[in-house]
Length: 58
Image 1 (cartoon, rainbow, N blue to C red):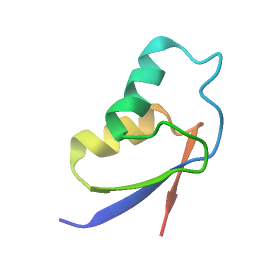
Image 2 (image 1 turned 180 degrees about the horizontal axis):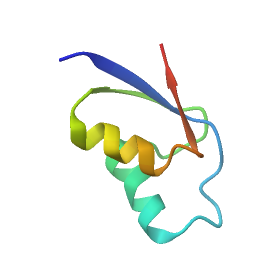
Image 3 (image 1 turned 90 degrees about the vertical axis):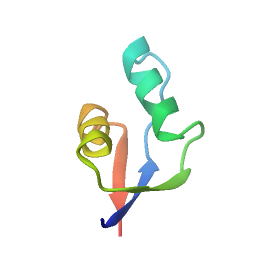
């Protein structure tokens, strides 16, 4: 599987609780933090759910 790097670009303040939990599940706890995951359908679905808060870094 390919790997993707996900970077949190916007604040989680005033986001719904489910989006905060999704960021936690991705391992993102701070702004500008980058984590690397395998590109599985579950991970890609989580990234899609919070796409307005994160960006995919090459």
